[in-house]
Length: 522
Image 1 (cartoon, rainbow, N blue to C red):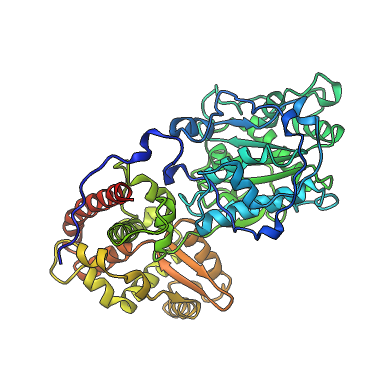
Image 2: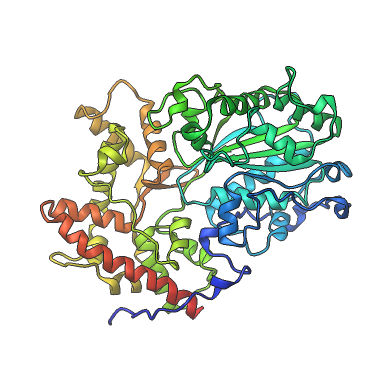
């Protein structure tokens, strides 16, 4: 049987806001039972519409969403935000109902939305009073799993669900531009005060010894309000921000983390997996401000909330992101080819309709010094894991890319449930690999804690994926194509680049037409 040929179609959602692509990722949640749905106080008619600063526009439009990510979004302003400051308890299902069509249900999206919902419920109810550091977290996960869009969508939904909580979204993308909303001599929190239209009261004004974070706390306390502050792409601040302004903003975050008043919850996000180290004062060469004495946010106050990438055998994720949860056989064939190429990374799946999708990083020996940022334990462990995965799944991989072939076998990839047959590594396998690397002198025998650190390094950068269970963790490659690339390198290092030069264009073309046809046939 020949593999299905994919005619090219224009995706039907290109010109509508009703069905965003997966690259517009929003949030999902662990769906609660109907019995857990609580009534929410009304009075929402008195709430003001969102403040639309120069960079806050609806998520539904791709360009608008990109703008919204570059700066400042405040959901409600004074005095409307003070008209009904009553607490509320909401479920993730209610959040979904506020943003229908934007909330995907992949495992990663579910984890993020569930965490943000619980955080805001506790904040609204005053559960963080007397507990410093309980409402401040650093959200960590691989690029492209939906952190930014989930947070943006949650901020927009939260404005209508928790009357006593003001949702605010900051983004440091483009902070080097003087027109960026967070560029302020008193720090980014002063920009928040202005955006909130805080009244002209001495207790709420910045200057004469009162920093922006103190004025903000005074305003919230005086009006019985709370604030949910999501700070995205914070690592860009360490790279490009003005020193004094950025230091003032971090000092405010530091105060929020140490505060026992329970008025502000802060979630820090970034594209760099080094963010937890940056906020604790560690120096990183690619982030100049990390060498200039930035405030230490203390990892016990901004502890890590880790989000894991879905595994590259989770075929249901592709269906969720392409809005095809119950595919026909023809559509399922296309889903398999997409999964083979880019795994279950939401951003990459979302790119397939635009023609910009790229295969996963080929972390070969010619590139590891750059890709691993000289983390040699990660390099050795990752390649050892890939090699053992190849050994355990050789029959599948050889059917995907037969001996002496010049391209992969599209028919096998599309027509067979290889994703059900794939064998991941268990935690015991990884422990044994680490011991072997120690015995061979490739990693430090004395430092037993470094295995978990190294695994987190690989997970947070999207080099591997992990499935958790009550008994063990299971580890996967980023994608099956990633594993095939490693197999080709081991098979014929001399001609590897020539082989991949042939494979990549064919595979990317198949992947893009697969996604296009899958949507057209839905």
